[in-house]
Image 1 (cartoon, rainbow, N blue to C red):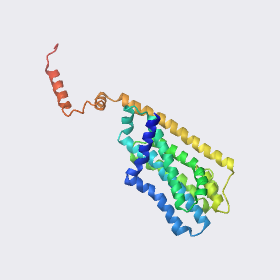
Image 2: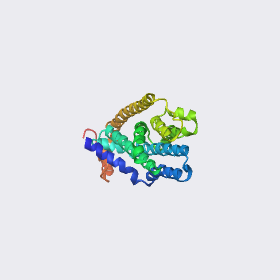
Image 3: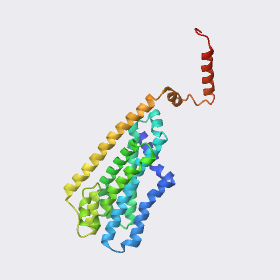
Image 4: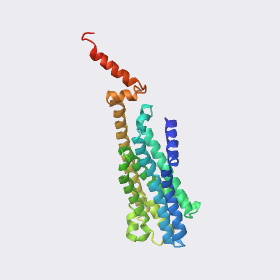
Length: 278
């Protein structure tokens, strides 16, 4: 089963690179980081802090929601999870692969944005470590939402909420009250480290309280993912095992023969014309 999950994970990682739309979504945070660093920062530490926060959090908002919400819902519209379940792949494996792909893409895109912003490799490591709780939280929440949604038209709501919560932390350099509010958001450790490194008033509520807030967000998101995956498995199992007979025959290949329907109608007419008792 581990090899199955790894195969699904590799497929989910490459899925974003096969779609021009998803590639564009991945390029946007990096391009925004480069534009801010090139035309706006101009040596201003506060502007640089805002650019680093925007680059890291915008990357997480985009990269972690694409596999979890958009790709998951797109595959659900094509009934890919049902096909995998009939092939013996459990529902939790598809959920785990999407979660792993979301985490990997979030870390990779955030690292690329930080490098574009001129952050050295040494300081970038602690910044990515501080950003990891937000990556796990957003990835778990995104995959959980993706397992509950049924169509692409319903994906904008959860993704907009996730983006708003994350990007609120990017506004921390603008006002002290916003900086304090950001300490209670999922990316509080990342915001606090950036503010301590690039500004004169770090908005920290303390290391242990900030870590406790991050653990609480991660625990809530992982519980949401666990609950959604159980519901997702139950729904898939009921669809595969409990559909009407005509859909069951279609799944088993009864309609693969193009003349199967003609024979079924001829058999039904013969049965109606046969005298009783025969």
